[in-house]
Length: 82
Image 1 (tube, rainbow, N blue to C red):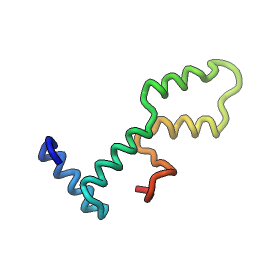
Image 2: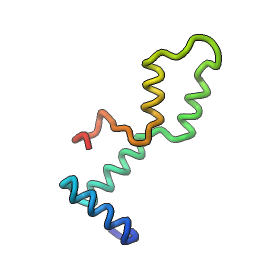
Image 3: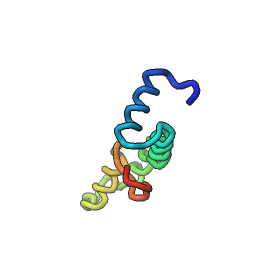
């Protein structure tokens, strides 16, 4: 990999070794995960669509919003669950 600071490359190499993957696989997984995550702007816009008064959100709605907001959440369509 080019233009990667040594300390970042060392961490990528450690994670790759710990998970039995290549550095490239770790990087691609991180990029895929980031691109699947809603942007802050998308999340804020979604929150704006929720009613400010009226019935409380259902448990399912709260869970869905929470999952969208969690930065570490996993995706069901990940190839190998990593």
